[in-house]
Length: 352
Image (cartoon, rainbow, N blue to C red; front, side):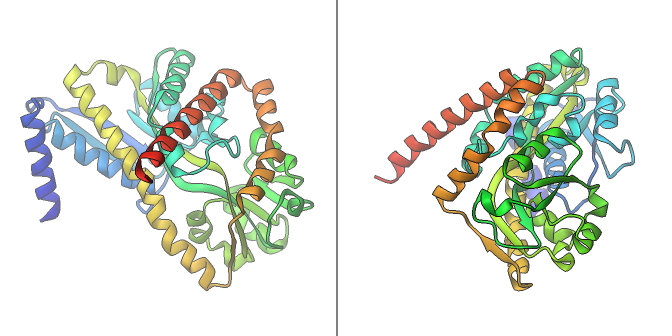
């Protein structure tokens, strides 16, 4: 009974606030994610679908396609969004970097300290700056609607030893994707970047082709990497695993203002769902990792500062080598500073 009650409440709220009336020919939004129904991407899409269909009184219908039914790579899916065969698509920064290279700013290490900072940043003008850049580069066809989360935070994990400082990274072969930025980070910390396709990573741990990776705990446990020898995780939180939600800009702009507002509010609800889902999933994942003999290390503030200092050259590399790097990195740094100031003000008010 819970879902019908919530849906009825949403419909009532839409009516009370002047929500739109039912349209004869509903607007259909085709949404896809290259993942499965156990993923936070699906959790976000279900919340989005429920919200916009209810708040629009049925004037909008959302069709969800999980997996690779409509497209299989980030570039292919974003091209589908640009052409209008797909209305909504979620990519990682790596999945969109070939088209919008500056989205890799989300992978720059140690810029956002925790969830509160990251969530504050991703609800402000930083996202609008990235949206404008993507619209310019796509000839106004691909619109960034919001940035959520897909997997929590990237942490260093390995099969060899506990990592407490950059010196402990020396000599380790760390799996990366085939992209320059994560490889620059691994090199800056003294390890050897080793590009390995994701489906081959389990066997690569077993055979010693790689010693470690940079993943969230839900991915580690979902892929059963401890069974391949991965036993050490250091919670350095070097990168927030951002989820970029794209929409066909023409589809959005052709809606009337009431429908646009419903969609924007729907993406806010989606974002909140994806912020929450990894936190919930991580609880059991960490418990299972420890129960299986895994070692989890939380760096002290001083130790984390040492990692951040060692990784600073990656920011210079980003500015020098990525189109739009200066603009988007400056926007992120400004947004982080504002978030930290706002949160400090909140702490001052709440702790006294």
